Amino acid sequence: SYDEATDLRTVHLNFTYAGFEWSTMWFEADTVSWSITPEIPPLAPDGRHYVRHVGAFGTSSWEFSVVFRGANRVAFGVAAAHFDATPTVREIKSYLPDWAAKTALICVMLDFEV
Image (cartoon, rainbow, N blue to C red; front, side, top):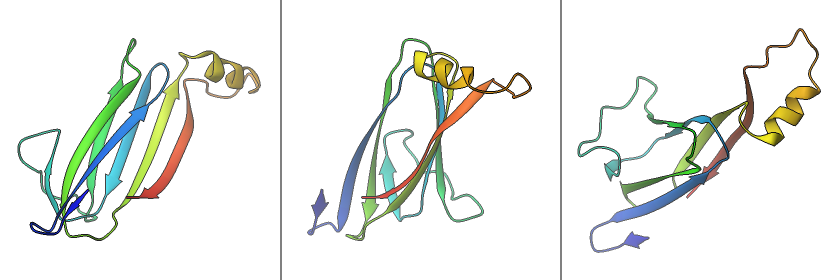
């Protein structure tokens, strides 16, 4: 949602997954606040903010809220590794040759704007 009076835009994201998952999200924006820490850390050398998440056994989602200055759309990127903890990943891995490393399967990489 965007508030013209304050020139602030609030975005709520909800990520769902099955089993063990490691993900990284990145974005570039004038960030005012977010739901992870009270203060926003400095930007990475490439000018982006990075958020990492590790999903453990028994969890299936994580939420992230962020407030940006300005009405412009913000581009996000997400990459996730899903480990051998779901029937789908186990089935996909069963098709790989014996010599292939089967520790994790990267099955999500996407870019989107909000």
